Image (cartoon, rainbow, N blue to C red; front, side, top):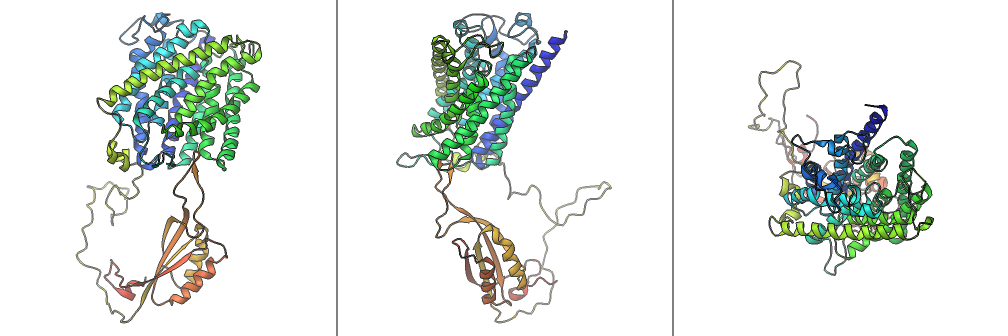
Length: 576
């Protein structure tokens, strides 16, 4: 094996691994944009979709995509398993990478197209229906479009250009997602009685941002890796920079646009904006200048903000914005090839688009490709969704959706905060020597610890509940300790008083619940005068601004200490 083959194979291996890593990014963004009660379901879908798509592409998808030069679909050497002669594919895509290296690189692209669908149908799709649809998409639908564009089909013969998959990957995933979202219908509560969209905020924006950065990193394999060769390093580096330039421009313009339209720089829109820029330059990254990539990304960042609102107005509920990002910006990016391509910017750029003297020829072919890919994918995907709807069903029950798909579909929860896995108790401390057998759970105490109990008649007990801002806890704690009050119950709560909460948005839609984070501190006092507690609390918390908080005072009938059985005043004392 010569040096060039080794270098190219290593490059394709690295790029394929980066694209595979994008599965984590998609899972994180989707989980972060959805509600906590559906997290297990979303993570499960993103796991299984790659397994299912890999199987479909391996069984038949590769052959349909690259098996000969039939204009519509591959017809030769369709099977790659079972000891088939694979020499037929020696010159497919590149001759300098072994067959299974080429296969795996195309496989992770196929998996990406299927993963796009997951976000648009999130929080109400049946798990089994999503699995079946993903298998059919990657077995039949995606390979046919891929053949037209990359496998020597009729669009390639017409001169259609799509370097890394704006039409072949992102648009296919976007059209399939749109068909699924339309047939599923919106989530319960997404639209009010007047049809106005309601915000259903994601449960973890930190997770969504982590996912974004994983996807951004993966795109440096997605686009530059599509060269499938490192023999022209300048080409690879040019594609790397056009990819990044489009992303950064889209981050800025989506932030500015949401700031102007919504009044706040919406983080969800910025995340979608970055992805929009990456998608929009995918088809043209090897054919456009750095300056043009900045323009493409900037336009995509604006487009995606309005696209999210557009689909909301059509009552097409897409929890993560997959249709706005991958469909709208995939179509836009496909057309950008015909507008911004510039012959000679890389060794791969052989034609110029409309703005660089190429006329309407290339743009016309790109428009035809957009229409053909859209019509074929939307119709075939819609048929698959319809068949599933009238057989196994595609939507979970109302009760399952309200309770969360984690419970209904998986019998599991992602955040079992209040469900300890094992009994707790006074187990022996860990010992270096192996124990002969596991310790049994401690038996319940037959009676309380015996104490000499002399109830104090007439002792008055009062509960003082303080609601204030979270940042005032330390002064409050110090003030109470100075009075001799040490037993505190502290709870993070949400609410508002005279200030009426605050405005909040999720991907451009105002949230109904505009609650402020608060802290509730509760104490029960008897020996310490209530008036002293009130004065100490007011002194510690007072600023004169709205939101300082309130003090609630209640009579307490009795207190019982569980360990000893003491009651009343004695139960409040911490002394042993």
